[in-house]
Length: 241
Image (cartoon, rainbow, N blue to C red; front, side, top):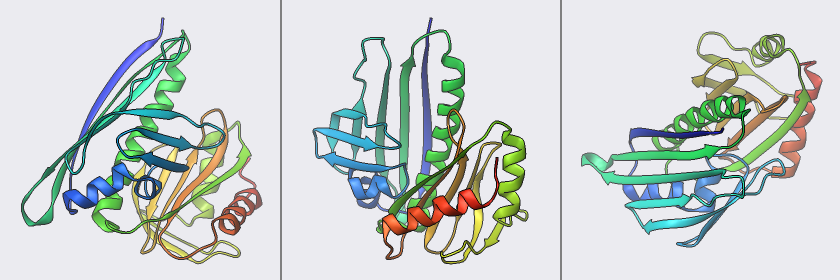
């Protein structure tokens, strides 16, 4: 059976068209708000790598500062995903960014994957807006930490809320071996908590099919490997299962 989907979002951000283009059309830019590690061959291909998943998307439109589109390559079972970004400069250095995401999920069991994808897409759009409004022109080191597998997510989420000191829209806690985290929640649903701090974007989430994930973007000078190891240790130390 399968399911075809499409979604369009519009953002007005306090960033110039050039800054928006750098965020969506360069590897360091995408690293600063999306997931995992990303590479862009200008006008050719966008490559992504996250938790063993390494898709490559053919670029189908490339007009620097104006229009970017990639994806749409169909797998043998019909699966595909495509992205399109339209950039329009406005007064006072602001920009309107329109984002279209479409695709097809095959099979009769598409519903769970689509729900996870829809929640993830909402997070990524909100994170991109947060990045462009607060960190435009800066590039982050992406951090991905995979925690334990969980079967009772509401229980795990309650423990996570306590661990990060969530109080209203504020988060304050000090992970062992890491700088203190003091920030404001910019995105939240039943599966995800996104926090903006002065030099970082922190995201805690329920991974598809079970694990707890910490997917952060750090805008200060850090060792990626050591920081990821520290966050993995933190997730494991909080008895989130």
